[in-house]
Image 1 (spheres, one colour):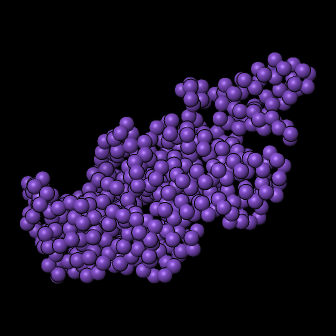
Image 2 (spheres, one colour):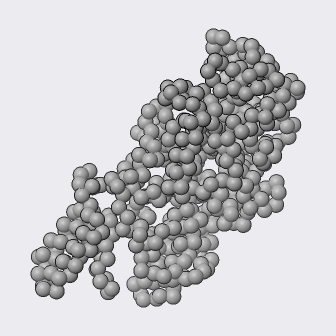
Length: 470
């Protein structure tokens, strides 16, 4: 039985789907005006693993991950670049897809763009006005927060406390400083769409409400996103959707924690972010995925070279155990699989699941060392299968161990780019073999030490000498 921590209740509870065997899940995606940073990568990987594991456990999953392709940041960036909003969002949506592919994040079943759902957004706003939850103010349409009795339940915030720190900006026509915009009146030079209240564009919060209802219905199983979206975005989604549809909205709310740099949240506003495409040339893409999975999704993780090295080393141990073993054609569900599922059933505990894989790799190495080929093949198949549930161990061991990042992390901080190419390494191994046959052990050691200094480790075995990058 899968148990999930529900941000709405603050506790774990068994997953009970509205439709037997079918999980409907909406995850807030990117606002496409810049490249994905590592914080975005964490959310993408976390909910990709949630989806993979639910399918592993036999559920049919309908996963919706939206693209916000119209908002203030997008309009401002397009104007700054001197390009159209469409050109900007098309370019960065394509870049997001490239980053997802590099990280092994599978496409969702639906990837709606906000601009394609303006009619649905308009209809939802009309329903809110008709039911008395929204009002017109100088061409805008605003949501009346005070009309929704449950406001603040998700975030644990109280209206009185929120009002104490709120203020109305000059030019705003709010009845309450907490009221938020559903529809913005058109401004010169900005994209706009027709509506009963005049030309304009949707507010950010109403976009997700309308898209989720259109694709999953007004009441569905899981809604996910980053911790920073809990308030006000997800709080506002609840208020809008429940008021407009007159039904419960989401059964389980999931929020992944922040990625920190020097104890501060990684974000574009703080200027302390690293984009995925800046990071990936320094390591194999699967390492970034393993780094994310090495911490429980609800807690913070600290981005650092040292933590990336640890993730790299953990993957190297797993791939190293698979080296030289032809997996069995089918993975039997052994004790490791049961422990893996117990970990993942407990609120998707990926650190514990990875620990199970490391124990399985140790058993595999023992079987290899004892010459138990059939046992090793079965263990390798199980390791591959469980790794696949997490989206790792998808490459051949030799390919992974012999892949060199363009600008690899280097413990010494220098010389990383001097790592030799495979042809040079093979030539060095041949020269070392010749030196050993001539009993010139000083030369043999010199070649081995030189390769080690340049980030290549040699491993001597019954079948000869193999190598891998450090």
